[in-house]
Image 1 (cartoon, one colour):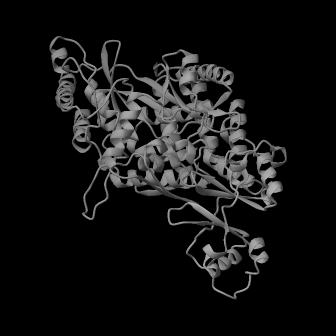
Image 2 (cartoon, rainbow, N blue to C red):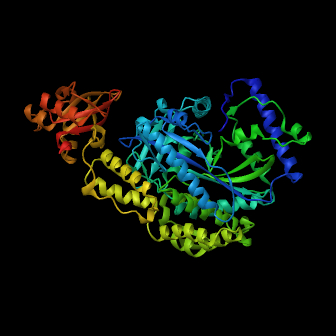
Length: 615
């Protein structure tokens, strides 16, 4: 999606021409493969770092365009949301101290970003999902105003033809409908690239699929979304569902998702993979292209395959095949897209070294994965890892292994041998893989977050706990210590001031409609030990409020007459905005002599604030 100028497929002539180029690019790719034109005598690594931008209250800071202008560096680029940016690191040869070089390069860039962000009243955070992100920040007003993002949102929502459904079950549940692709913006990742010899691409790709589950299990860092404990790596479910354009049907029809793991082992060559992708995923974005790739090859030039690359950028495989040209030579690489950002830079580099070591250290017995493992096993391992992280029980070589046993006794030895084979220094190899070993024996990022979030929730309301958690992550991230060395949050040292209404309001609401009976309202209030109940009309607008104090004043706490709620509710109740200060809430409580305030947005109740919440 690096192209600046794209169009939605409404211009039929341009679309037809683009498809011609897309087919021609496949032919050109096959010609390059047949002629052995690929750079196969060197292995390079590369990475893309997605970064969350946060304000002084640890909320998303929509300043990416201002920040990019201040940075004035082509290695930084926009992301879908205005509170994210991406850093593209220069590729390095896989050798001696390459991971330390990436570590230094990344820290240097992040220091620069942090300094520039600080001048704009903001800071940065590496997190798979920013804990404090809320429903407000997935509104289209936070979409980065650039043509390709606007076009992508329009065509995906048009293709879907209805709202996107989010249904994620973990320890908690999240069920939502959304009218844009902005939930995808909640995700930030550390994307890994590894150059692969063209003659070994299919074997390498299938191996990448096989190891994806165990690798993900020790890298999970996204367990929370909007205060809900969901999957250990919630990004996996969220990304797939937020861009899922498939239509539901009564017929049993197989439809390939745009975000997915795949359905079978790959065969043949990389061109076959692209053919299948084009066959199963319609063209979303187009652009005008001047020259045909096959013509460039005939002129002894190397084409960039622009149509193929644009289409490939709208198919989001967790392991994505990539074509590129560098130094006048074409190359192939695998892009690992399932690794989350954070918890720290050194954690990310350890993930990088572990994955690369596994990839280049592949034992010969796994050259032909279809003979070693059923594809459904690899796919199930991946989904289980996203759900349960380090607690996953994997099927490997026909046997069951805990994540700890599989990584320590099977995979880490392969990674060590792989890095040794490519001349990575012993100290370098041992340093980064030791982090993986200690994390497997200790705590992963998702485990640290959940344990500390639960601890904070014992004292704070949801929003305040999420803010305190995010603040702690920011502070610990700056120490540079890997997550297995992080200490727990100290509740007694956590600030309780500088909060706003949404930080302490209750979002667990019991509501009734105005045509319901008072007997039902009193029963629900009694059963759930609550003193306040918002009343809505059929459109979901707030029209009244029931409180135990109000009912006592009206002598309606006993079952005398079975009134309807609309007959006895307190009409036109005083409300407050979620972003209001606690001082403003205290003033309303005092001046109106009331004990609770419905918290509203666009006429809809999103929370309740009571005087007890201020204690």
